[in-house]
Length: 118
Image 1: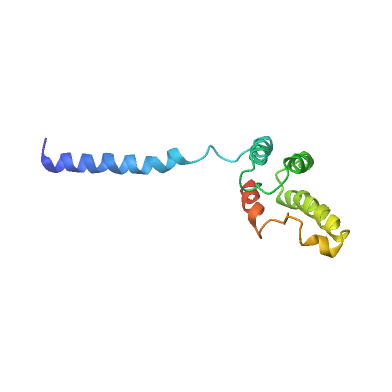
Image 2: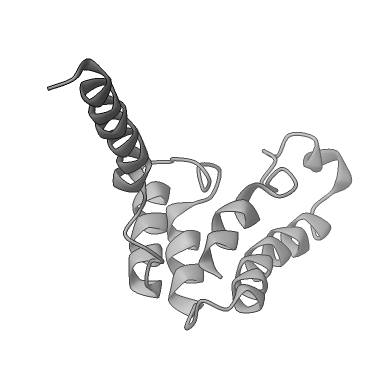
């Protein structure tokens, strides 16, 4: 076989192999609601990002209220958890607020995870 053909075949084989690698790394497609709920609860149970600062019981409650993958529903459900903490904080003596742990998430922390829900 001619050296030029061997080089061309080798280049073609390497190119095809390189193109196939990203495809192997891709996920199997969009996850179902049940899969997302299970993943998020598992992360909450082991205090993993993006729910590392949330109580696992609160996560379980919020996930139980989710019925669809609609992003507005997700925002409403998670906002209800935050609203409950805000109401509890409003009822406290302002001097005691300084010693409470911060329960709010940094801006955009959890929504990044739920944006993949689309």
